[in-house]
Amino acid sequence: MSDMGLVIVGAAGRMGQTLIRTVHAMDGLRVAAAVERPGSSFLGRDAGELAGIGTINIAITDDPLAAFAKADGVLDFTSPDSSVEFAGYAAQAQIVHVIGTTGFAPEHEAKIRAAAHHATIVKSGNMSLGVNLLAVLVEKAARALEASDFDIEVLEMHHRHKVDAPSGTALLLGEAAARGREIALAEKSVRVRDGQTGPREEGTIGFATLRGGSVVGEHSVILAGSGERITLSHQAEDRGIFAHGAARSALWAHGRKPGLYSMLDVLGLN
Ligand SMILES: NC(=O)C1=CN([C@@H]2O[C@H](COP(=O)(O)OP(=O)(O)OC[C@H]3O[C@@H](n4cnc5c(N)ncnc54)[C@H](OP(=O)(O)O)[C@@H]3O)[C@@H](O)[C@H]2O)C=CC1
Ligand SMILES: O=C(O)C1=N[C@H](C(=O)O)C[C@H](O)C1
Image (cartoon, rainbow, N blue to C red):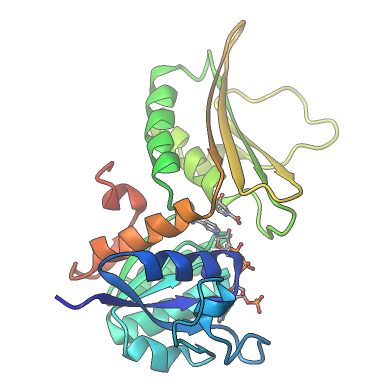
């Protein structure tokens, strides 16, 4: 069988460059095209040279429709509005769309669900094996420990360039805790605390966000009881873990029927 051809959108970004290196090195996959925005200073540059692996004869283009038409799938770590647009194109082309972008509003999520009637979409706030396994552990811990005894807080730190908060991973871990507690996260999350907050409300899930320097991604879920505390955590040391998960998702999704899947489906952890 021929290699699966993938379009990397946002090819010049931190994840885009990591994806170019990962896909180029991986058996069964090839870089079919690399896309940046119209007007980008990277247009026309060779995607391999930009990613530090030498020429791969793929010039960065601003034409996603033409790129999607000749590919089997798309790896997308861009922005919420762009990912919604790309999901529409992936639906038209009836191909695989792996979405790693974070920071979606409910309106974006609804449009992605609609696109998944025709595209095979894998979407996750964190594509690493470690974080998805952590989510399974968090769900179990939250189920085992009563809300009256243990409070749950999610703490995250990322590099100074990150534009959304809480991180997609923090929300994914919060959702896992909420599943364990059989509550709706949207009704029980406390995303900001400032000033005279009053005491902590039992059963809520709190979020705290740190930003600075070059931190790739650190997450802790703290289950705090009286006299003891459990901390489940993950440190990402290299963006390659996310790119590897995205590439693996594309291979898993290839030939599968349209729908909206998660990394838990890909990893068989669901
Ligand atoms: N799920 C996961 O495992 C992970 C998710 N992420 C998420 O991925 C996203 C990107 O992160 P990161 O790589 O650090 O960000 P960067 O800003 O470094 O990269 C994003 C790139 O996408 C480009 N882009 C945006 N919109 C378009 C468009 N319409 N067409 C073509 N190119 C576009 C940007 O161009 P421009 O600068 O011109 O806008 C930029 O080059 C974030 O949402 C982040 O949270 C990151 C790591 C792991
Ligand atoms: O923006 C990032 O860098 C990351 N974003 C994802 C998130 O929002 O959780 C995943 C990872 O932590 C890196």
